[in-house]
Length: 204
Ligand SMILES: N[C@@H](CCC(=O)N[C@@H](CS)C(=O)NCC(=O)O)C(=O)O
Image 1 (cartoon, rainbow, N blue to C red):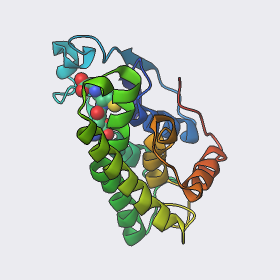
Image 2: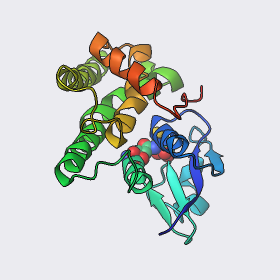
Image 3: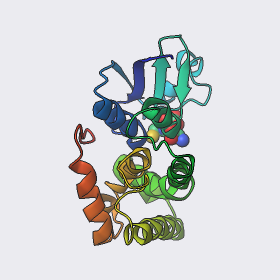
C-alpha cells in the first residue's frame, strides 16, 4: 500500500488541513508539511507547479510514496484511518460515519468555515448583512443537527471516536470564536475530542 510522504497545507490555519494533521498525530505518523500561502494573489495553490499535483488548486494534499497525490481532507482521513481504530470495521457503522463526513462538507463547512475565513482574513465587511445572516442561519442549522445527534450519542463515528469526529471537530472548534452560539452539548463533545490520545491543537 502506498504510504504518505508529505502534506501540503496552508501557512494560515486551515481546518481542512488540520483534520489531516490531527489524524497523522493520532497515528504517530511524522511527515514533512509544506506550507503554501493561500492569501497570495494568486494563491500558491493556483500556480502551475501545485496545479500539476492537484488540478483543483486546494490544500490539504497528501503526497504518497508512489509519486501520486490525494486531495480532499475527508478522503485523506479515510485513507489514513483504513484498518485502524479510527475507521469503523462494520459496513453500516462506516457508512454512517461517512454520512457525517458528507454532511460536514455540504451542510457545515461551507457555512462555518467560510464565515471563519470572512471573519479572520477579511471579506466580512464586503458581504451584505442578509448574506452573513443566511450563512449564520445555515451554520446554526448544522450545529443544531450535531447537537440533536449528541443528545443520544457520545460520538459521530459509531460508539467510538474516529474519522467523522475528526472531520466535524476541525471547524466546530472555531464556531464560537466567529460568532456562532455553540450548544453546551457540543462543547462537551469538543472537550472529549481534546482528551483523546495524540490530540494536537490547531496552530494559531
Ligand atoms: N473540500 C476540500 C476543501 C479544501 C479547501 O477549501 N481548501 C482551502 C483552504 S481550507 C484552499 O486550499 N484554498 C485556497 C484556494 O482555494 O486557492 C477539502 O475538504 O479538502
